[in-house]
Amino acid sequence: MKRYIYSLICAVMLLLVSSCELDLLDDPNKVTPTLASPNFLLNRIQLDYKDFYNALSNTGMSLTRIVNQGSAQYESAYTPQSTNGWWSNSYANILADINFLVPLAEELNYQRHLGIAKTIKAMVLFNLVDSYGDVPLSEALDPLNYFPKVDPGASVYEAAFMALNEAAVHFTATTSMDTTPLNDYYYGRDYAKWIRLVNTLKLRYYINTKLVNQAASTAGISALVAEGNMLKGGDDFVFRFGTSNANPDSRHPSFTGSYTSGGGTYHSTYYMWHMTEAKGFDDPRARYYWYRQVTVNSTNPDEIECITQIAPPQYLVGNFIYCLPGKRGYWGRDHLDPDGVPPDGLKRTVWGLYPAGGRFDNDSGAPTNNPSLGAQGAGLYPIMLAAYVDFMLAEAALTLNADAAAAKSYMLSAVEKHMDFVTDFAASSRESANVSDFYASQNRNISAEVASYLTYVGNEYDVASNKMYIIGREYWLSLFGNGVESLNLYKRTGQPQGMQPGLEEDPGLFPRSFLYPNNYMVTNNNAVQKSSLGAQVFWDTNPAGNAWIY
Image (cartoon, rainbow, N blue to C red):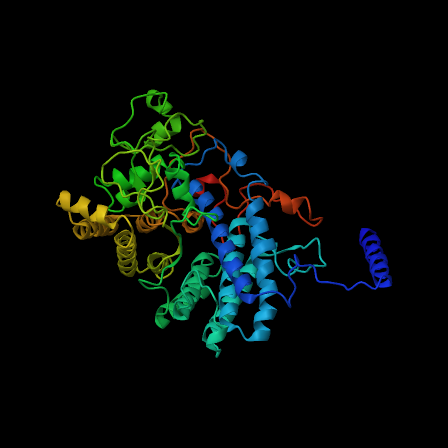
């Protein structure tokens, strides 16, 4: 009835305007196919995707103990309102813009625009299924359908895989130079790298679906390895930030959160412990990951309340690190610590040089409330790195092919690639001189430290009864800044097992998927909310409940 009334009003208005003999003009605020620029559309798609990725990544890092999750209960942290932004950005922005771009680009033979757009479409669809399970697709972008039904997660995954196949064709199709995208924010119009990304995303597809179709995953991964055209060193798929604080601010969001007024994210006690204490020596990347504003632990309970408290019973029974990871000023919070914010903004450990573009930790122990410090925000989002390829191949070699030797080789290659990526990033940053000066003053050699680390991990792997734990732990330690892949790893393998529990004995169900967002539930008559956060996506066939991931 509303549609009928609205149509009738429009018809009357049109009649009145015609009777006055007025010219009908296009609304200058409404983008039409004749006015739309494929370049501007593609710009928006690329920029919206980096924001979508970051929102998912921050949540994944919180859940996998890379940063603190500031809530005592999972259910209170992840409500239907929590992911409204994910849903609207993915559907109303990215997928809608891609749907609008495709016919324009096809008409103009803008093949590279199509390739980039369809690659991003595939990533968004994969991310949506990984986050929610079944989601709308076949009816989602129909402007006349206000109540799209969900499609099975498996079919959405297949549609994403098909989009990758189409993208690969677009990247090699004949086109003229004047149809190349104005901006390629990821690869600078290097389409050979885009093709290698496409193949890497296929590897990701196969590794995620190995539990529901082992034979297809084994064959698919073998074919990709034989082709040898996945991401290699220098092909890393990242979004890089600048140093401008003008509107819009081009700096890494984690930098602005920690270096403009100090404070920002509470980092995970458990993750910092793994990087600085668990092996008996520091991970070579620790000084790049974090900057300590103090180099000795506080003894003031008004700043760190937990130093005067006994660890919860589940921490004592499981022998988990509690409150502080050591004695050297690494200052974060335990998993699911909901405490308020004491006056510790200029003392807690903050984001370092990698990936946020902050300071390299040279033991100076000074406050960071100064945006001119470090790399001044010129950080990056590590969306898909060459190192991740080797970690996925290590998992495949061990779990699909039962080849422990090949898995070890891939794992060590992955760790080394990630170490190189982090140190190369530092060497090309504004902090490079400070990094070099520190190692020179300490008479230390980063290459030797990396070699020692690889030897230690290799020996640990050789004697481990659970070799997937070693692979999973090292992948997790290389996923700093990427909660998307760390959460998938955790749900897919349960590794690294034995994660630090919440401070409450029963924090509720760990999110194996997220509740459908409120802005979808209240506007769609066909929307049906899932039973709980424990609902598993189609490729997660592991045991239900928290026991699998704790």
